Image 1 (cartoon, helix red, strand yellow):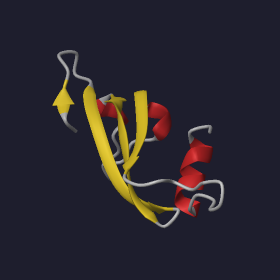
Image 2: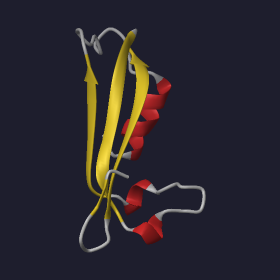
Image 3: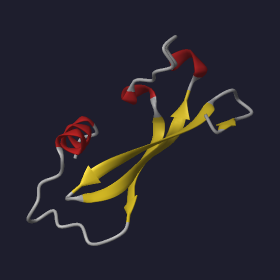
Image 4: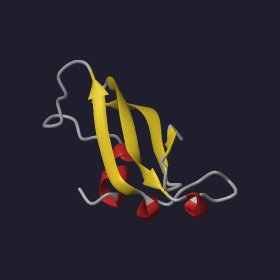
Length: 82
């Protein structure tokens, strides 16, 4: 959590480093959730996140044409509908 809005909603951000086409990339997820949607295990379903923004940051040329994304990224992209 990075901020609590005046209406009680929480602004969240999560970062994960992934290896994509032999390069280290940082995947950043940013969005807004209700505190009621956070489980006791501190988990939030992706369907409970509003204003979801996902970005992939890194350096270098990504060669997706010659190397498919790793399995973690493929699963994530399938979940969010890409």
